[in-house]
Each structure stands twice: as structure tokens, then as C-alpha cells.
Amino acid sequence: MGAVLMQEQGHSDAVIGYFSRKLKGAETRYPTYDRELLAIKNAVLHFRYYLHGQNFTIYTDYASIQHVLLQRTLSICQVGLLDTMNHFHYEIKYWPGARNLVANALSRRPDYRDEDVAFLTMEYAISAGAKWRMEVTSRYLEDPYFGSVVKFLARERDLVQEGGDTSILSKEFEPLVFQRRKRFWMEDDLLFTRRWRQDDSPREDDTVLCVPRGGNLRYQLFHEYHDTELGGHFGADRTYELLAERFFWPRMLPSVKSYVKSCDTCQCTKPGRTTPRPLMMLPVPQDWWSRIGIDFITKLLTTDSGNDCIATIIDHLTKRVYWFPMKESTSAQEFAWLFVKHYVRLHGLPSIIVSDRDTRFMSEFWQEVWANLGSKLKPSAPFHPQTNGQAEKANAIIS
Ligand SMILES: [Zn+2]
Image (cartoon, rainbow, N blue to C red; front, side, top):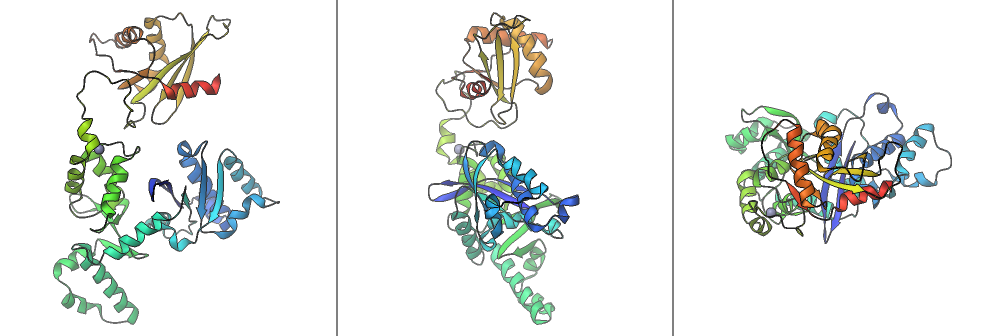
């Protein structure tokens, strides 16, 4: 099963994420209808951080799925699947599979091919996915690298279909093309390859789409994987890594480097500033638990153990939250100890803490955290004095 999460952005759709996995065990014996529901459920759960509280549309190429909500009698399996879906605001629409861009590409990865696969595309809006794909297909032939490979594969396919002799290909094509074509294959008019290691052996399960030169095809990808909120303006290496997981073209790294070099936003916000800028938009953190928000819910009724305050710690990437009780009068030193006990032992030290608590409290707290860990260093405080929207949102859930 495969799914792609897309978001409408202006005139085009941006890919937010991909999801795919094999059917396992009893799932392979599900009727088609249930398998499709299962795919939807899995994909929605996979993307739940983006989908919770949003209205979204699920596109599927299995027509009768869209009537699932109107059905009167449901199997136990279906009830279970729909139960999960009750937490989301969605509608289901039919979208014929031929136009079902990435989900099909994912589902048809060679290693999944033996499975009977349910397809699903999930989007906030239709259109550009199919447009982008068509442009990819139309530009292969004029591409200096992929052009000859595509011609070779097409010619070979025709010869095989006609029962002709494929050995004449060695006369029609240069040896270089012969060598190259082994790495590629066509599916639905798209050219795929695998990621290759330095020593030329294929990696496992890393199918990537070949993107030809021309038009805005590669530029659009740069934009998606670097400029957007999710791209997060990472450096060239990280941007390249993200792209190379899904796409291929010759000399990809240099092209990514020159794009990132020319990015205005990156030029203006190079790291190295020592004073935090309070109103700066924080970029999306690169890692789990690397940037956290700390906030306190105060003025609560005092419990038997004397606590009247709740500390909230939220991870800015995953939005996962920890809450623990404390006293409003808790000193920075005591809070440091609680922080180590409830947080550091699980996730280690964050690189940035966002909090609107006063700087003196936070600095004392931070020194004490390090002291608790046995360090004699006096580390500079990684605080971002900014309204801590995410922690406040989390607070709203329990208050
Ligand atoms: Zn940038």
C-alpha cells in the first residue's frame, strides 16, 4: 500500500510526505474493500501530526470506497478501521488510478510487486501531481543522460513484444548506453533507478524517480525540499540527502549546492549570530527533541502533596508533550532536578529551549541541569525568549 500527502500551495501541489508498506499476515487475505480501508487508516495514522484538526480529502482509485460513510451494515473489521477515522475531518473522493501519481510509484516498487496492493492517494487538492508527472515523462527524450536510456528501453520492449532479436540493440546503441540501461527500468512512462553505493552495489529497497533536465522540474523539487516550511532551509548536504532519497539525476549534489548557495533566505540568516532575535520565526527543527518549549500552568488548586503548578515540555518537531506536577514556588535549582528526572533521562539535553520564563530563572536552571549531570562547565544558555505558542497550545489541552 502506498500514499502521498500533498498540500495545495498556490498553483501547484507540494509533496509533504510519503508512506508505503507491505501488507502482512492476515491483511493479504482481506477483501479489496477492507484492504483499501486499511491503507487509508494506516496512511492517516502515519500523517496524523499534519492531519489532526484539519479538513482533508482522501483520494482513492477504488470507486466504492467513497460510499463507505453511507453504508448501513459494516463488518467488525470495517467498524474498527472507521473508529480510528472518527478522530479526523475528512472526505473521500474517487480519483482514477491512472492519474494516481506517486502512490502508484510507491506501491509498485519491485519488492512489493508480488503483493496484491491497494492504492491510495491522499491530498488536500488535485491536479499538479499529475501535471508534474506528465512533464517528467515528456522531457525524458530530450535529456542528455536519460534520453538514450529511455530510447533503449522502449526499443527493447518493442523488440521483445514482436518476438524480435534483441541482440541487434548492440549495433543500434553505444556500449555506454548498454552499460547504463542495466540500472534503470520504466513503469507507467516513468523512469526509475535505485540508489547506488560508492562500490556500485545496489542498496536495498531504495527506488528513486529519475527527473530529467528542463522546465522547472528540478527547480520545483529544490523549492519543495529546501524553501518550504518543511524544507526548513537546511544546508546543501541535508537538502541533497532528502532529495536523493526519492529522486535521481546526474550530478545532483552540485546542482543542489548551487541552488542552496543562491537561496536569499539562507544568505540572510546564516548562523553565527550570538544575540537571539525575539521575533524571528523559528525554523523547523532537524531532530526529535532538539528544540523544546517549556511552560508552566500556574494558579491551580493545591494538591495533598503541595503541588499547585504543572510544567509542560513540548518537542517542537513531534509535538509530543510531557507534563509533571510541581510547586509554583519551585526554585530554578529544584526545577533543574525535576527536568533531569522527567526529561533528560529520556531524551538527553536539547539544543534549544524556548520559554517565556525570565532569563535569570532559566540561566540558573540551565547551570543547575549541567551541575546535576556532574559537569563543571558553565555552558551558555540556549534559550530562545519567545512566546511559547506550542507549549501554550499543549497547556490548553489539559486546562
Ligand atoms: Zn534557503
